[in-house]
Structure formats: C-alpha cells, structure tokens
Length: 154
Length: 192
Image (cartoon, rainbow over the protein chains, first blue to last red):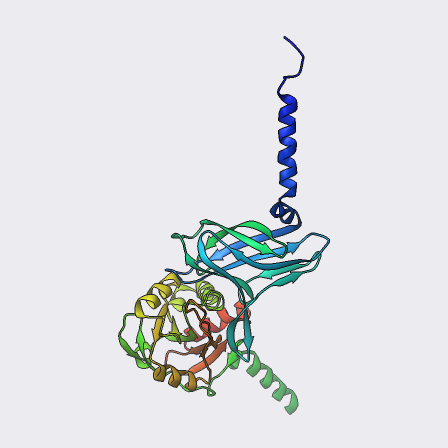
C-alpha cells in the first residue's frame, strides 16, 4: 500500500479551480448572492387567463440594483405591473423598472406590484414549481422558483 | 333625578335596543335597490328579481385581470368561509364583467367555478352595463390595446351589498378589515 498521492489529483484540483472561477464570474451567481427572494408564488386563474406573480425581493448588497423585468419558460409573455386605485377606480399601470437601494426590500403583493404572466407554454396546475428569471440592469439574471397557488389564495 | 333616568335610558338604548353600526360603509338609502337586465354565465337573459331571496354582493370586474379582481374575490371567499354554513348559503356573489368582448358565457362560468359555487358570472351589452354602472355611480373604461390585442379595463373595485329584498346596504372595500367584512356579512345574512 503506497501513501503517494494519486497522479491525477493535481489535475482534478485544477479542474475544480476552473469550475470555481467560472462560478464566481457568472453574473447570475453574483446576483444570487446579493439578492434575496422570498414567498415567490404564482396565482393561477382558469384557462389561459393571465396569472399574477408575487414575491418579496431584498437587496442585501451594498449598492443599488434595478429590477427591469422577468421571463419564464412556462409563459410566452411576462410583464411588471402595478395596480393603482384612484377615486375608487382601479387600473393597472405598466412598470418599466424598479430601483432598490442597498438594503431595501420591495414587496410584489396583491393590490400593488405584480408580475403579469400570459400565454402559457404548457398546462399548469396548483402546486407546480415554475421557473421565473428576474432581470436586473447590467445583464444580471436571477432564477427563482415560484409555487403555483389557487385563485382563492390571498 | 330625571337626568339620571334619562342617562340610564340612553345607556340601555345604546347597549341593547339598537342595532350595532355596520363596520363597512353603510349605503342604506343612498343607493337604489338592485335592478338589472343582464346575461348569465349560461348565456341566459336574467334580471335582478331572479336573485332576490338571498343577500347579494355585486362586483364589477373582468376575467383578464391578474391582480386586483381575484384578490377581491379571494377575500370574499375567505370571509364567507368564516361564516357558519347557514349564513354562507344565504350569500351570493354576482361578478359582473364589464369586458363582454373577452368574457363570453363559457369564460365566465369557468372563472367563477374556480372561486366557488356562491360566485355567479354575469355580463351584458354596452347599454345594459352602462345603465347598471350609472345606477351605482361607478365608471369603467378600456385601456389602449398592445400589439397583441391585450388591454386593461379600469373599474370600481368596491363591492356593493344588498339584503335579500334587494335593498342597498353596504359598500365593502379591499381596505376593510376581514373581521369587519365577516361581521357585516353575517348580519346581512341574518336579514338586516
């Protein structure tokens, strides 16, 4: 029995090193480390009616970030909106981007900011896990898993 | 002495002899009784008289509304779930779509079924919807169409509540606390 290290070990270590470098160099990974997404849920309606995406986004980094939109392989069209109520009349306004200062938290919640997800690419049912990519200024992406919830979920 | 007796009377009156005030907005006498001629989710012509005998919640909305409309319906569902069964059976929710172009009978039926048996979908032509929205002093309108033909519909988000005789009683808003909505719906169902 020999105690000499295996000949391929340095090569393996080198490969790991490259993998690690690649990992930290990927923009999406940088975003993942600095942004926290919680309570990501997607409220489904029957048929192909538009669904609403809700979540809490916290910018845990030390600099500001700008949320610019989202996409999902399960939907053909995803946009950001805000419900506004003026003199008892409710309407939806498109939101182009949202800035979050360092440490700031923003809530996408019923009656306010929400994602509108249209044109399903596959059938979806309650309790499905649905992948959504949040887009940030500077080509950053963050992949988030949304849980599909019933129309009556609050 | 007289003053004390008077004070006692007033206290008793406030304590037990009068109805407690409604906790959501009281519109008794301020809005006209329930009246409409619309088409239901089975494609049948219906009028308000056919819905008397139960307490009615009337709500103007549309199905291509991802956020606020399902939120209001979910709140009404949660409120009725908290009532006892007999009271719950006395409540019906009329979802009046102000977007008849996209909301045909089938879409409405599928939509209201997703929320529960107490939800009934109605719509109508422009004349019928205009008459009904004017009657309750609310407005609706259509936003600009995007390149794919999608458009937003602005509408009143409040829910009008009528007793089983079709008399206007309450205006319930999304900002009203759940306890207030449950208490008022229970009182409405008991025949107030």
